[in-house]
Image 1 (cartoon, rainbow, N blue to C red):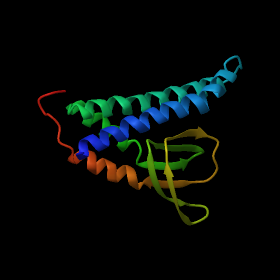
Image 2: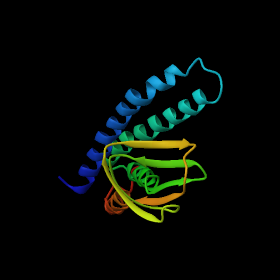
Image 3: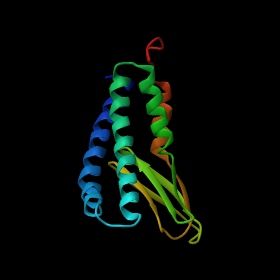
Image 4: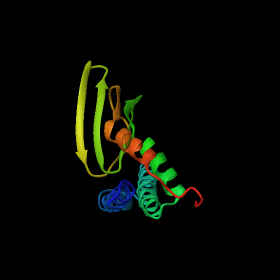
Length: 157
């Protein structure tokens, strides 16, 4: 199996897993808050929609990449660029990962460096977090380099 097919399968499998996890874990929370007033329902619904869109784009990109479509490679690259930063800044947390994550981060207040390895989809957006943490997802960078090397049919979208 060549690199393009392996990366295509990776995107489809973890994209489907991400959709499933989002529906299973976040779906009930959105439904429970549906009748509530205030911004919690809107915030949860937005995060839910963003997560479903992200993982659905991954499935689409994987299928198109498998078909050697240039647009599949482009979408894959954008999705993996979005997975590189990991941070908590001004109370806002951002951590997005399709399937493999090895985050290296610096926690400013603690003056400590941390590492976190995770297998599986992660979609963590939120507010109200303490501290300042800056980091990167090493696997996202490695996969981005691999996606850049994939050969596709340049004449097709």
